[in-house]
Image (cartoon, rainbow, N blue to C red; front, side, top):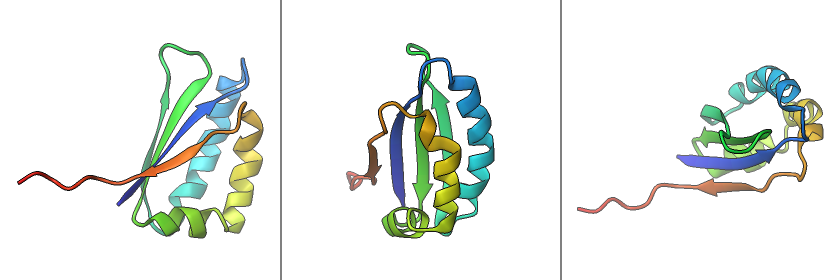
Length: 99
């Protein structure tokens, strides 16, 4: 399993509109091969800041399958105009468990 993390800084005052658009966009990501689950969290200390956590079966499910799909083009239309600056997206995996 791979965890995608993106810190989303939304243009000031557009948090409500972003959340409404994300409600539509989440159905897109849910339909993708390798998608497991996601969570969108709103920052308590900074207005218009969110973190998106998505779990994928494999890294390529996100980087190749989702990002190169026609569905991603719709995702971009719904969400990318809210970001300032554009988010850095990183991928994480669990570490080896101690015996």
